[in-house]
Image (cartoon, rainbow over all chains, first blue to last red; front, side, top):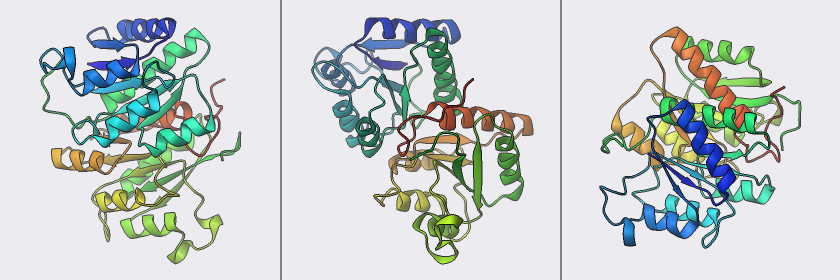
Length: 146
Length: 157
């Protein structure tokens, strides 16, 4: 499954709709703030059962998030021995030099800027999905399928 | 910092000449302007990046926007090269795509352990290999925002 961490409802809608159209078998879990994202990934609280909270094979991460900021979420993922192998792709409206620099500092796999135009946004999701789910080899090859 | 319109630099670390040629040809007519700099062993890769040995002058070794790294290399193995690059402050942000024939779990695990950005297995079929290079090129040179650029390459019409 893909974990989508996005607080903007419209953007989340575009991402999920694009995946549904292009890769309908692909399950996506949406969380809308950084704290919940970390709870999910670290299997805390309501997410403690690994069966109902499978490890994502890809994380799509927005930066400006409520409760815990995206860069902090990234940092925690990449510092954790079990989670650091999961590809994290930042998908943000920010082109700020400092955001880009810090993201790579924290070992983000890839940094993408959301296109303003819907058609281009869908194209991006198509190429992103194809690259990370088909071309890229994921380290967690032995996890149960989603 | 990438200048709009200037070709993006790719460092290709590959000892198999046939594979190197496929990569070069795939990127030659790519929609995103690029220049491939090819080295054929792990030592040369590090010399290039650290500006030493035969790569002392900056014109001979422009900083790459992405590195395509094979694993089984002469002199210094690819995983060692990866580990070394990620230790250097001025180099560790460069996106590194491992591009290898190996599909072994331990290679995949170690590559991600050493913070490879991506791991791709070379297809056996020539057409699949060139298709993969085209898609990989679009993704890393077109969509992905480079750490040394303020804006991603402006290429889609």
